[in-house]
Amino acid sequence: MSDLITRVLLVEDEEDAREILEFYLDTIFDEVEIACDGQEGLDLYTKSYEENKAFDLVLTDIKMPNKDGLSMIDDITALNENQKFIIVSAYKDEEYLFRSIGLNVISYFVKPLEVKNIMEMLKKVKTKVLEDKSKQEVQVELINLNETYSFNTKTNLLYKGEELINLSKKETLLIQALITNIKEIKTKEFLKEFIWNDDKTSDATMRTVIKRVKDKVVDDDFIVSKKGLGYIIE
Image 1 (spheres, rainbow, N blue to C red):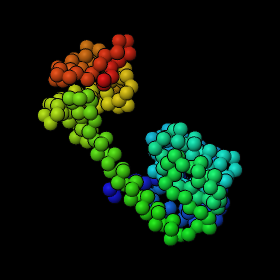
Image 2 (cartoon, one colour):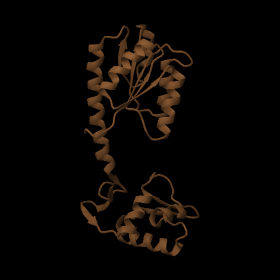
Image 3 (tube, rainbow, N blue to C red):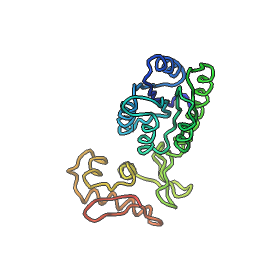
Image 4 (cartoon, helix red, strand yellow):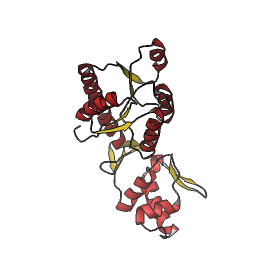
């Protein structure tokens, strides 16, 4: 698990609290990004999310200028419903605690900050994050193409149950292309560029490779042609 990167977003408008939290986060997590208010936090999160660099944890104050912490949490959750949060606030108002229920808030730190409590919680959070990441990696390695066939993205091997299906290099590249953003239809041009690095490859050559794979998975064919659009795994 040591090669897994843990990323945290800290959103805090008070300079002293921000510096303290940043220092301790840096001692535990691999990457820490800082925002000084809710809007800046949302902008940073959105940019990272769009670049497929999600944060494992977001620590946020509640009362901040431009956008408060709970509003930011609502907006982030709309992007990623599984995002985990820790709230840091000087306010013990039960209203905030009540409003945070159901928002994937896993802890609540009250200012003035107690370093021992913070460190203990953050270490537990990191351990859980790494465990979850490891499980996700194992799951992502093996993609079920349908009820019969699966593809191992680490070894680039196709299986029918436990039986290995022999594929040529081009046939393997075809499946790799099709499982890229698996729910999207792949155009002929995309497949040609992916497999041959040349979108000028003839349609006949491409169809030959597709037919060879379809012949090998005839028991439960997962390659579907969408007329005039391309191909998709279904």
